[in-house]
Length: 95
Image (cartoon, rainbow, N blue to C red; front, side):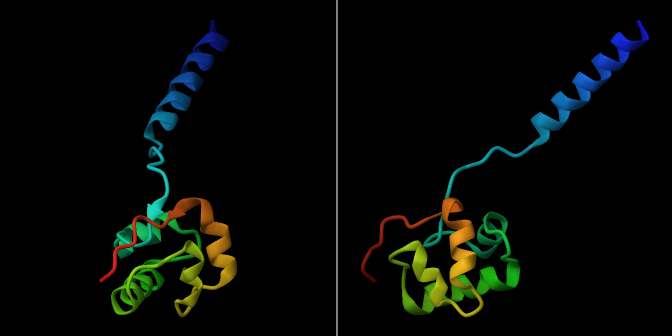
């Protein structure tokens, strides 16, 4: 009976942890995301670099491709590559 109780507790804890995990909302649009969303979605990018991305976008216009993030100071090709699956470029409108 003691083993059964441990099993139930273990299953309850596992289910609680699983349900507490945030659901993936899919890729983040780098042309519309704010700094907090970018920092959350991108590995190796904190609030400061994310704010730099937003500032670059506001100065230079929308990104045409995800790869264009490497034009932002402090964001290299390796950072873009490791985050590629988390990022998207939505519809690009002429400004």
